[in-house]
Length: 364
Image 1 (cartoon, rainbow, N blue to C red):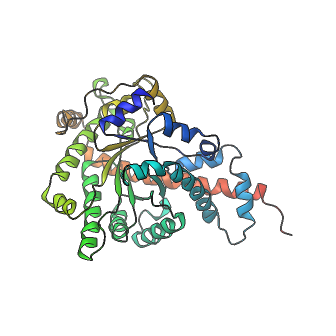
Image 2 (image 1 turned 135 degrees about the vertical axis):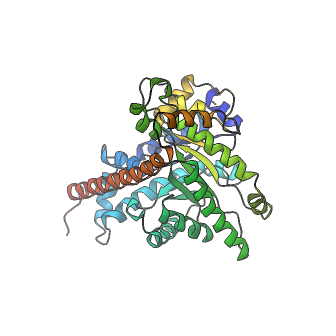
Image 3 (image 1 turned 90 degrees about the horizontal axis):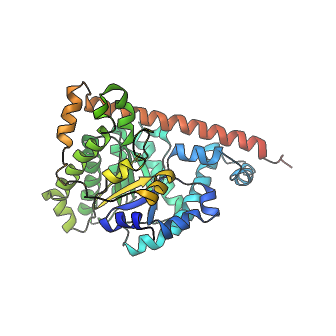
């Protein structure tokens, strides 16, 4: 086992891979990451699948087969491809799921980004996708938008594990965990099992991409980490709260905090910046392959994140002093993130349509 990734694991942080392709499954790379690099989970999103399906011919034969099923829409073809991959990944990660009693070993599948503002459609899609995937260790990803919060509560109440995506601030995180807890509280009131897993995904590097060009050099690449520190403090405070303790006593499990978008975007910054800065017990870091390899090669685990957020408030005050409105930027980043996933979604469906036209056999 790689000593650098193992050190994070021993700290109490889960390492998940923020990628999936059929080739990773077929050539044994994912199995190697699990065996050698302490990888215990996997996340996906529309952009990841856009790249996976659009590059190369790994999916062409499957698209041809599905194209012969005339009832299959382009969206149905995509979900058939994605679910096939994620089932295989879920099975590879099942030992981690079993060993951790369901805390680890998860994969994630996102509902259509086009549903981000439609709670009812999101609720229906989450239920259908989870039933079709038929894996205990598969999260359905739902964005932490206003409509998404309604869908998160309803899906948790229905017993569907949820990965809340597109969170950018402490306030957005707190809204997401409140929706999660409301769903659990409703289950308890209804006499249902309160053990429904969930994670809350806070995006990090996009803060610095947005802010770096607007701030002095000494503040560059520090905003995302400060936002994470403030959110981690809120996470720890929530776990100590009377409300959560009552749920825990009833048998519920915490909604784990997940660091997303942790690949370094600034070529002048260390390529392991967000991995080393966000090392914290009882959290997850899902990272791109390039970042995983970098950390395995030369990453270092120092002191874990401060439970009280460390210097997060001081850093955020410095950003406010130079005109960065963190609340407004968080709202903008969530909106832009939803739009970006929708754009990738449309590009993904166009790719599949083009491939279907190119590889489909003529009707007999």
